[in-house]
Length: 537
Ligand SMILES: Cc1cc2nc3c(=O)[nH]c(=O)nc-3n(C[C@H](O)[C@H](O)[C@H](O)COP(=O)(O)OP(=O)(O)OC[C@H]3O[C@@H](n4cnc5c(N)ncnc54)[C@H](O)[C@@H]3O)c2cc1C
Ligand code: SF4
Image 1 (spheres, rainbow, N blue to C red):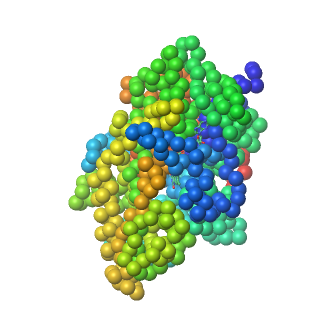
Image 2 (image 1 turned 45 degrees about the vertical axis):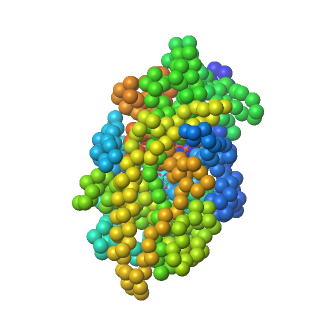
Image 3 (image 1 turned 180 degrees about the horizontal axis):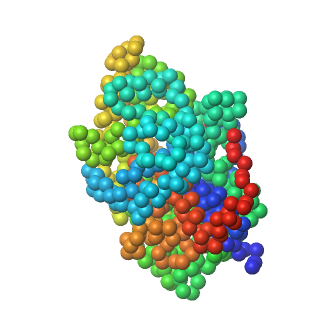
């Protein structure tokens, strides 16, 4: 065995790669983790809205191309922990029905090759690992769970509680959003999380957000059999003469190319970069790209239809941590619209600096500063449907090309109308129904050719399924065309559902992890014989 030979190579340290590395680390197998980025530097700028949201300091500086060949600047992050370093940590299970076929206004959302019950135990593991705070039984669409959340829900601040009460009075079933922050409200002195207003979209300066670096990678590399190489960009995968096995992983590191190999290779670069890596790895045996006999690699790109809606009230909204309230009453439809509409929750509290970067229409008699002080900042997500023409491909100079035409838009418009209606029914004790001044969209498109959130929730480009003609991965997330190549990031989704994707990516990576341990002949005893890792407080 040479130094460059491992049992497993995991490429990428985000939601998928991180969870897998954590799960496999105690096995004793030689594991190499390759990450193109470095650690997010710990600095005050981590929590500066100007630096983060306006200057986009932590975003990748690379450019992709749109379908017309114009450059676009993707709002995505390459660091240890991947996009979870900056995510809002809303950690939802998909609904049980999302695993079956669902009829939408815009077409069919296809069934998954596994059922909700197959993933349920791994959802529980992922919720425990990510210290999810939530209350079961409040969300009317929540799937059955075999255990409670490990932590109680993060409490609403008074303005959000008032809104929740208003919604409940009007017949809705508002619930506490499950979030992965290490907040201990019973014992604030011991709490790692200080409940601040720079969480969603920011890296946590005090390491209190449950992200893939803090929760998974930092723990995995405590094992001597695990090696992490940062600033290591995987350029391509090469196969053996039969084309059935990845023989070597070619990495650009410190300005030169290095080669690594392993019995099993797991790609987890995020849905767009993983598809790009397979397409760039085309060879004689795989002329359309690695594992792409189906011509499905890169296709069916989805990223949700998302919008940020600001409800402006006469009353101020001094909330600090806003991402605590959700409404799923319209997730599967309503009496007047029989198709799924989606999910309503919140983004982190918007401030005037951030608003300047995507200025909404101004409410009459309000400035941006006043709007930020008085807004409730809703996040609306509707399902977009898999369309083979929405795809990642490789363009000039090997650049990523992202082609995307939104679909199923009626669902999103209906969801916005439902929120508008619900807000009209709110009844403030001071201003009555006159308190609510209207809903204003914050533009997600400013300065970018595609919606920011379209890339944040990227999925679907290397879908799993039973049929090798219509999918790239089998139900274990192994490529149909190769014997030692797996994918565990958001690429595998055959449909995007309408809740945030990260918990499903984490849970699936843990599920695939069990399968890989079997492939490597690791028995249950071997796995449990390792010392337990310390829990974050
Ligand atoms: C601002 C923001 C807020 C979000 N909020 C939420 C939320 O509240 N809830 C939720 O569920 N989801 C949220 N998301 C989405 C969530 O972060 C992603 O769904 C999740 O991180 C995707 O996991 P992944 O493993 O597919 O990819 P990533 O987490 O993107 O990980 C991919 C990793 O691969 C590395 N990489 C890429 N290419 C290569 C290469 N060639 N060689 C080596 N390494 C490579 C990257 O640097 C990265 O570390 C949010 C995202 C953003 C940006
Ligand atoms: S709210 Fe808590 S977890 Fe989020 S950034 Fe602030 S301290 Fe970190």
